[in-house]
Image (cartoon, rainbow, N blue to C red):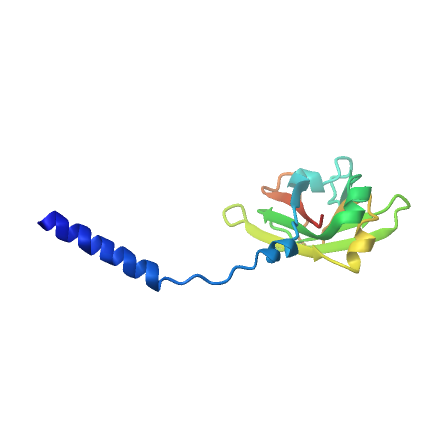
Length: 186
């Protein structure tokens, strides 16, 4: 008898739920409005610079500007130029050197014309208390059109004047990790 009552209550509950549940109208034509926007992430540059990288080996004097160059052939490829909606550049620094740094990321074309400039200031840190800086640069139109002309990235570190220059024995590290996220429209 108890089993029969349980089955009756379950059927009654199911019927009530079936009658009182609601379903909204579904517009299947909305699926046509969906546009896929794939993303592509790529590492840009990575570096670990110690104090000795900022000291001239011949003169033992602090180097005021340090540069590195990387080719970026894919940015101005036909696919990128035709399908790219926007780009996000992310630069992450960890500084345990007791020194401030001004960092420029110069995106230039084959004629060395500046197409995009991203600048970051990294404050001084300590061995036991490094400073972390993250900088994001979202590039959309109209800047995106000129950014797409870039073929080379010049990574330039400038040391502002100070009374305590870096010496070869100075402890610490300036670490950079970076990536570019590209958003496409198909």
